[in-house]
Every structure is written in C-alpha cells, then in structure tokens.
Amino acid sequence: MIELWGECWYNQHIVNIWRAVVLLGGVLAFFPVEPLFAQGTAFTYQGRLNDGAAPANGSYDLTFTLFNTSTTGSPLAGTVTNSAVAISNGLFTVMIDFGSSVWNGQTNWLEIGVRTNGASGFATLAPRQQVTPTPYAITAAAVAGVIPSGNISGTYGNQVVFNNANNNFTGIGSNLTTLNASQLTFGTVADARLSSNVALLNGNQTFSGPNVFTNFGNSFRGSFFGNGLVGWIPTSGTAIQAVSDTGYLLTSPQLVTVTVPASPGVGDIVRISGAGASGWRVAQNAAQSIIGNFSSFNKSPWTPSGASPLNWRAIDSSADGSRLVAVASSTGGGIFTSIDSGLTWSGPFGGLSSANWYAAASSADGSKLPAAVNGGYIYTNSGTTWTATYGPANWIALASSADGTKLVAAATGSGVYISGNSGATWTPVVGSANWISVASSADGTKLVAVASGGGIDTSGNSGVSWSQPYGGPAGGGTWSAVASSADGTELVAVANGGGIYTSSNSGGSWTQQTGGLPASAAWSSVASSSDGSKLAAVINGGGIYTSSNFGVTWAQQTNAPVKGWNAIAASADGTKLAAAINNTLTGGIYVSVASTLSATTVGTTGYLIGGQGSAVELQYIGNNQFMPVSFSGNIWGY
Image (cartoon, rainbow, N blue to C red):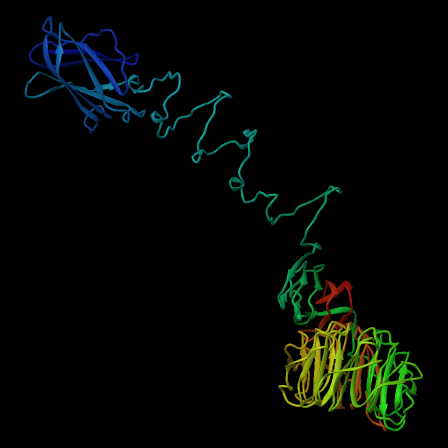
C-alpha cells in the first residue's frame, strides 16, 4: 500500500492533498514543507515521498491533469508530465502550468499519476482532488499597483462595485447597459446618443403631442402650423393641393392654381400670397363655395352712356377709369372726353368734325390725350384747342406712356413712329406695313406693334430698335389689336377671324387661349389691366368677353348686348370698362363697373382670382363654405 499526502503552495494559498494508492509495493507519503511562490501562470507543487519507513531517494515521473468533473469527463488542461523528478531524502518540488484560461471560476479537479523513472506506466490516484479557490489566483485576489492592460480581458459576470470617486474609465463603453442617467453630473452627451424623441435646438422638430406655453414672455420666430397658426411655404409650382393651416407664397411666373382642402375642419386656415407675375386662382372641390365680397363682371350691367351713335373708332382710359377719351370718324365725329367714367361726354373737339379720326390715347392721369386722323395729322394739347403736330399719314393707332411724354403711333402702309416729348416731334422707327395696333408699357420702354396680314414686332428700348419674334396668328385670321401690362411683360393680341393670344415674356413667345372662347371670331379690340391679369376683348358683331387670370379662361358678359363693337378700354385695376360701337344708327359707348359678388359658384366651376401682389386668408366655416378673414389687393370671384 502506498500513501500519498502532499501540499501545493501557490501565491500564499495552500491546497492539501491526501490520497492512497497501490504503487510499487511500498508506502509513499507526501508531507508539507515551506511554501514557494509562483510566477506567471505556473505554480509550484512540493511534497515528501517515503519508501517504506525511510524517505525515498532517486528519480520518479509525475503527471498532472486538470478536469472539470470529479470522475470521467475530458481534460481541461494537461497532461503535464514532470519526468525524472529528483527526490532526495523524500523531498521533491515540481512546476505545473495549465495556462490562465482554465481558471474561469468553475470548479476543477486535479488528477495525479506517478511511476518510477523509466517504468512502463503511471499509476493514477483516485479519486481526483478538488482544486479549491487558491490556484485560481493566477492574478492574486488582493491586487495592488498597476495591472498591465494585456493581462485583463474577457467577460466578468459577477457584480463589481467601484466606490472611489477618483476611479477613471476610458473606452467606447458599447457594452455598458442599465446605466442610471441621473448619476451623470458633468460632461456632454453626443446628439447621436439621445433618443429620437428628444428635441434638438439646432434641428427641425415635429411635436406630435400637445404643447402648452403659458409664459407671456415667450418669443417665437419662424413659421407655425396648426390650430390657427399658419406658416408660409414658398413654392414655385403651378398646381398646389392646399393643406389646412398652411400659407403658400407663390413665386411661379405662371398662373398658379391652389385647390382648397377637400375635408377641412371648422376654423382651418389657408393663406395664399401671389408674388408671381401671373397671379393665382383658388379652385374649389365638389359642393364647396367661398362667400364674401368679391369683384366680378358676372352680374355687372353694361350701361349705355350719353355718347351719341357714331362711327366710334377708338377709346382709352386714365388709370382710375374716371377720365376717358374717344374718337369718332365721319360726320359728327371728332374727339370726345368724359370725366365721370363715361356716363357723360363732351365734344367734339379738334376742329375737324368730319375728319376720319381713328386713334386716341391717354396718360395715366388723363391730362395728356393725343389723337390722330387717318389720312391727316396727329393732334395734341388735350384741351378744347388741339394742335396738329405731325403728318399727314394714314394713322391707325396710338399709345402713351403713363406720364404722356413717350408716344408711339402707327400708320397703315407707312410705318411706326415714336415721340419722346408728348408728340411735339416724331421719329420713324419701323418701315412700311399694314400696321393696325400699337401698345406701350407704363414707362414707354417696351413697345409692341401688330400688322394686319403681318406679324408682331416688339422693342425693349423705347422704339430705338425692333424685332419680330412672332408672325401671323397660328390659328388663322389677321391681327387686329394688341394691349400691354404696365411693365410690358404681359401682352395680349386678338385676331380678326382668329383667336386670342397672350405672352408673359414681352412678346418673346405667344400662346393661343381657348378657355371659354369661340373657336373663331371677328375680334376687333382688346384691353388690359396694369398687371395684365384682367383682360377684356370685343367682337365686331358679337359680344364682350373678360378674363381675370391673364387670359387663361374667359367668360362672355351676358349683360352686354351683341353689337358691332370696335374698341374697348380698361382702368388700371380692370374694374372699369368702356366699349365703343362703330355704327351711326345703333352705336354708342357702353360702360360697366365690376359689381360685388357675395359667393362663388358652388362646386368645381367656382373660383377666386388674384393678381400679382394680392393675398387672401380663407377660413373654413362649415357647410362646405370658406370665407376670407383678410385679403389684400383686388380679389375676383366667379
């Protein structure tokens, strides 16, 4: 019988081993000696061996294997063999190194084998010896000083408490969870680490929940939407589906159609501001309407004035529509003026009552009124005494700048002429053609002239040079009249035996308009408001048509008679119209003032129109009705 008793000393912690095995027919015993200190991951095992009653001497082989079970199982580490271990007087010492990975906190058992040096096999001690915690201290439990970073790795699952305020941690901290954020007392948390529900001062925010601001010292800047708060959205589109409690700043140079919400809530707001050159149109959905006080010619009467039935050839208006000038040819003709928007007339003036007066124009204030005789002269002075200044020629058309200093005149078969001193002197600028009509911007820099059987000529430098960007009417007929907005950008031209055409780029390109118009008619004259949005045109032997959206759509004035209309004029805002008939029996001059419309037509055919610089704020009041709570400019209803 062999008895084995030994001790393992590792880093000042002792594991005692007592086992009995049959080996070599003698008694083998290990007795403790003074402990040794381990370095690295190896630890020292020391014991005493007796052979019988006497201490053993000689060489022995020892094996050490580590398991995580007390019986069977697979080795965790080893077998570590210590060969030819010298034993003197029964004492021996060996080094065992299983590495560091096996000491992970689980319970392990040590299996030991022994043989005499050179024997054929090892005798295994049984049972295995449980390794108590001491050998796990590859790094001692009581650590002092700095541990090299390479010696710390892996995952530790037990609780660790760091209660020293001077502790300092670095690293990405990606696996830190369930931290108590209330314990953060300084430093900055990056925006990316915050919840998406946290509002950032330098970011765009959407607050889906209710927010209450009760401090009267609060200050707000920017756009606010919802529950009566209406922010502005600049948009360059031409077709917009409006959203409740939203304002639209329209910047497109084209006509912009804004359709109100189909299912708004009571009190919802829609704002529209027309910064674009062509204005805007508010479209309705089925069963909707807009109530208010809007300008409209839909129900405006056309009233015959005190002007006699004559062969009226031309008519023009001051900016406010109160002062008018008209000329009539042949017997009883001459120059006639009105200072009450055409209700009464004075004249004839000019001293040539039987002359073939054919053209007239007015300055914005109505104080300067040039007129011309076809086959005669151009006359100025604007009073009861008129002075012939230039001619003779077959004068057919005249136009004036707003201040009356710059004039343009056209003579059939002769040319186009300009004057920069209110008609005192004239200069020919365009050659011979069958000129029929001219128009001028308010400052007199942009001019346009049309020729019957010819094209459209334009000038952007007060008539010094001209070009012809457009020929005859694409839809047939011959040009008969042209009109211009105050800035010379919006133009409109009509064709005898054809249609109506508009340009929004000073005549660079033209579009034939068909909305609400007959396919072809004997259009004889056309007039424009100062912004070009309100237009009026007449048919010789037909009716009077108006448009409030730059000519895109037109409506016949059913209250106007069907006559031999020959000329029409409009005030700067387009609310006052005057039209003249070329007929000595049934002719005369009719006037109309836009009336107030209390509600648009119900449904998709009803709409509002606003020009450049106009704005409206519509509020839904229920029962499929909107109502303007504020507006700027002249709003037209249909």
